[in-house]
Length: 93
Image 1 (cartoon, rainbow, N blue to C red):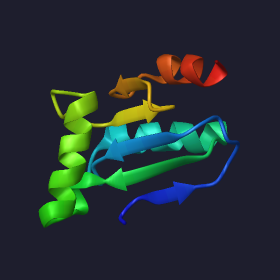
Image 2 (cartoon, helix red, strand yellow; image 1 turned 180 degrees about the vertical axis):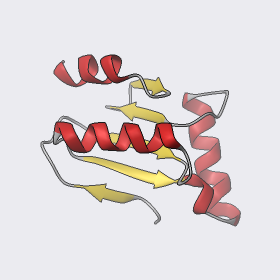
Image 3 (cartoon, helix red, strand yellow; image 1 turned 135 degrees about the horizontal axis):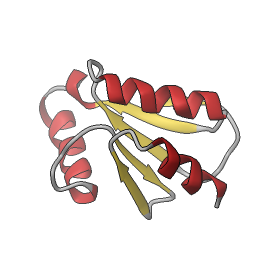
């Protein structure tokens, strides 16, 4: 499985769908690192074949526009794009 885990404070399940070349994806990942929370991430652009298809369909369920970064928190909230304040607020709850 291509999903990587980053250790930190557990605030519930969180996964970041990102592109390895995306500056906004890097900023989102850096923000999560700075906040010290645990999360998983996957670079969708580095995948191939069925694996890539699977993750693109997963992103599309949360974000029909299939844009990146797509951050899913607690399997219930999706934040699309680098939205620092929205991410900070969501992690406070």
